[in-house]
Amino acid sequence: RVDQYKRKYSNHSEDWDAWLAEKQPAFHFDMNGEVAVMTLRTFWVPGIEGGGQNYLAFIEQAFNKLAESKTRHLILDLRNNHGGHDIVGMALMSHLYDSTFYYYKRRTSLLKPVGKAVKKGDIYEYIGRNAWVGKVAPAKNIYSGNIYVLMNGYSVSAAAEFIAHLKKIKRAIFIGEEAGGNPVIFTGGQSVT
Image 1 (tube, helix red, strand yellow):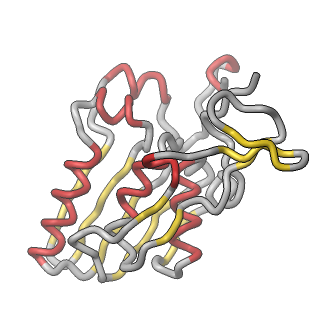
Image 2: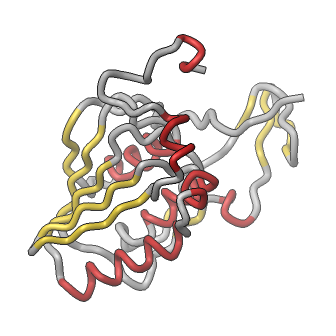
């Protein structure tokens, strides 16, 4: 962990443990005329819930407001978002893309994972169920306006995967530093035996 070195993640990043201890809301949504700003501090569900929020309710309410107001520009602030759970990114994507797609093509591991997996040659392929299948279907309210993503080198893990999906479908303009995550390799939350 970075905190064992007695420093912050960067000069531009808050102290993660201090932020969690304050139990502040992870998500913020503001609208001003034709511009809306959605700040997403984390995709980590316990961190979101610890700040008193439900990510599904927040996302649904925000996109309902966007549909009602016909806002033309949405800024997604993912700076210093250290990731978390892909289901949060998948819920967001369901409001940003009008076609069904899969968040994952395959999920594999070189080592035998805990949970259901099938050995295929030299690798293990995860058997997903529910949200872990990765199917993202369009939501009722699809935002069709312009999207701008604020990001930096500390937009990592699930946040970087979300950014990669937006880039792949050419759905946003990206502003800031290159994200710190890997757009093609899923590395988080894996346990091996």
